[in-house]
Image (cartoon, rainbow, N blue to C red; front, side):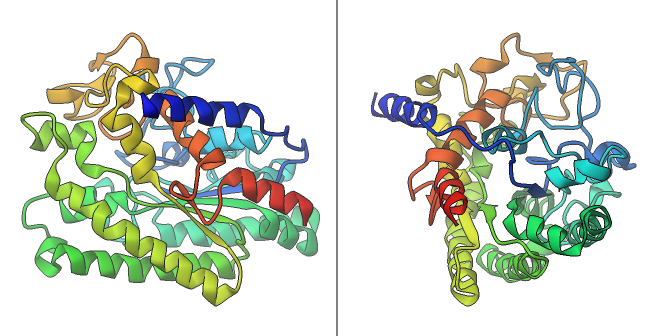
Length: 362
């Protein structure tokens, strides 16, 4: 009951938010399949969401390259900042004035490490995403001039989502994986954090000044891992060690970088808690289940890919998970509501509404 009341208060708070300016700030997105909105459609890779029933709840009812039945987190953030959705960087439509909206560089399958997702072959590693960001700025400068381009990038909102694949598609991909033989889990986490520091520092060097950094979610609770590892439906304890080890170190890293740069550049997004709220009590959020994916096969619909031959639930709004790893659009909306109005427990040191209000005044 307390969670139901809390959820109601949250949505009331969101309803009272002031309307945002039509002259919305630019938005840049980096990361993996949780935030990819179609870059992998343009690549020869198996990590794609370009076939039905992906996109079943979009206006066209066609797949868009998003790993969702409809909109993903960046789409919903764009709604809140009063902007049209960012285009994939590889889209031929991203040119001219469309560049002023920003760009999505994310690519399904990637991680912090360049060897993560090797099985997907041709994907846009994070180092390449950052190179594309440099290239984007050159293209933008040719449209609006270098000073205006620099200002647009400095004022932009940035979202980066990395880390989960470094565990599920690298460390735990197979028993006795190369990385698991090389590192104990605590040592692997420390290695990832040291590598992530280089990535975030490079984002700052490239002009990013407002960066939302998501932590690792409850990896042991997603339908894919329940299907592989759970006979009872309980979250897998080994994979649940990951967020316990990783997220506090990521938060500490962001604090160190903010102290180094003398400003609140990086904001920690507690993706673990945002997901666990509806995983532990799905009914209070209007879901019938948080264990079974809407689209899939096998135990919990968590085995294999979501395809036209998969089991498909008739009502996506009452499922927390769309496929084996990714939330439904409705779950994504609950997650972004916490981006906007969540307490420091969810967004630290401030939520997105506070950022938007503060940046409007300055």
